[in-house]
Image (cartoon, helix red, strand yellow):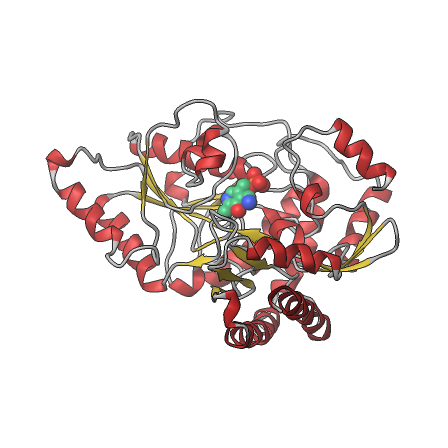
Length: 417
Ligand code: PMP
């Protein structure tokens, strides 16, 4: 073990996790490649858990950021006005919202995904005057108490140390033969059911941490319709599935739905800097000034890189590129599943949010560990870590994408022989 790993293992809380899965010290990274202190090269199929959809150290974003720093652009300004913020807001309207005919106010809830979810839950309760929130099995929404209360992972929920209240968890699409939304409506219609009309429903269109479960568009549309019928607010948590991961900027675009509130973070800054937004339909923006605040709302460096990142979305070429490369991934994975029946695998996902769920206990973790040895960074997902999750940067060149896929095959080959 290297000296640096030993220091981390000795001094960092036992709660640390990724250092256990990827036991090396990383020193450098460029685009879809990472290097450790021994100079070993890794292909990155992890993308900072979805925070690096454009890869590491993108040249265009870096240049904008370095210029900004060299000109002594303001770094920290809470939510005072800054040119960096105004430029981001203007471009976000022009490049993202207007072309998609979406009308949202942009709130900066704090630096990370969980801050966005917290603000969404608070606002939904404030707007409707109701208490309950409906969330879904396998959903993941963050680690602070509100977000955790709508997260469907028992191990993580236990970490709260208190009972988590005022939420109801319903079965997510794909988990049951019978549609959970039909049952919910029956409960709502029946005054004696004890199920009160909730303030909101919060859902991921594709569950990331929950194991790459992609809800059908039809189910999402039904969910939206149900919300409209009952005056329930629809919150889409696009923290992981958003910013191009499923093939479009917002994951819900393809389903043709328009959520009331959208949570975004992870790859929003484009450069791995913390930045989160909560998008709010204008008529719901009833906050009192300062009612939700935080010291790190809107980091100006993150605004600069986020503004540069939006250049990827100026026309449709990036979406086409994602689509073409995702075809490469799916055909490879389908091939793997049929070539190696021993892994009892099922291909899951949408766009660049892809995984193989294996029925063989412990196999996914073995595959990711073997991949690490062979120079590929990839993590597991799902309630029992039964899925190995492919999350390459969206702009990875096809050649290196194929190299990474070949490492997965080699790992499986070595494990099943
Ligand atoms: N929502 C989803 C869907 C997520 O995947 C995550 C993080 N994995 C979060 C919320 C929480 O984001 P953060 O870790 O930045 O607080």
